[in-house]
Image 1 (spheres, rainbow, N blue to C red):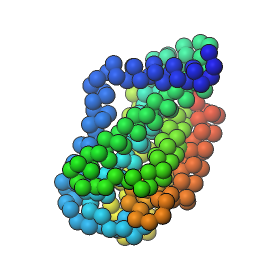
Image 2 (spheres, rainbow, N blue to C red):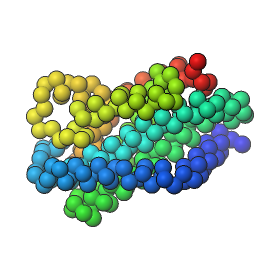
Image 3 (cartoon, rainbow, N blue to C red):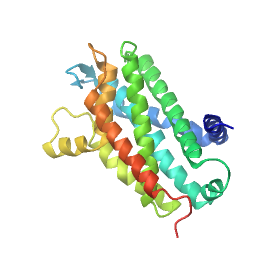
Image 4 (cartoon, one colour):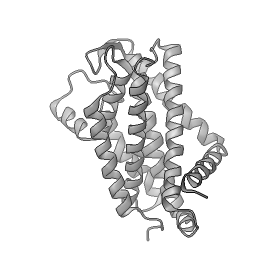
Amino acid sequence: MSGPGQVVRQVLFTNKAFWRNPASAFFTFAFPLMFLVIFTTLFGEDEIPVVGGVTVSVSTFYVAAISAFSVISACYTNIAISVSFQRDAGILKRIRGTPLPSWAFLLGRVVHSTIIAVILVAICALFGAAFYDAELPTRTLPAFLVTLLVGAASFSALGLAITAVIPNADASPAIVNASILPILFLSDIFIPFDNPPAWVDFVGKVFPVRHFSDAMQAAYFSPTGSGFSGVDLLVMAVWGLLGLVLAARYFSWEPRK
């Protein structure tokens, strides 16, 4: 079988395994909506400025913000934790001994996570349009899709890279959440910033989460132009390339001793 065919088979297998755990699948899709409802309820309907100088309601802002969070959750958190558990269970070691190329297995995982991320973003967008009058980004749809795919690829690579510092499966939820949750709070995801403190703004701009959030806002709310945020996309791509290099160098197929 050709390389692309093996990737497709791996995607189908991962998808079947995903849906065979209905409880996990249900909360995977319900979790972002829970955050969307909670944050819009807590922070009300005030008008706030977003990227590009556009003013939108808080509820509309959170449609784009939680969409970005959905991609990060599917492509960073879930990949890092699930791969760590598979490594500790010896599954990765057994797969390494099969004729299936390593790159086909990992790419299949990344593609499946990207598909889940796209579904999550679609659910958030449709939910926002139905209940919060958030207009769908139809005019800037190409920019929105490119931003989504660049973000998914970058955070997938970073998710594989972070497994190098996870000693065992039990430690994976703590390490992965500790590495991403503080950055989410400092990156215009959970809390909309108008004039953040200088150190918060600096820290946020160092990491890719803030750039992903800004790029999603630009693609979602841009009243004019194409909706592409070139600098933010470039920073995300650089982080993704760094994650890919680290994963290629330090990714382990065998359980840590």
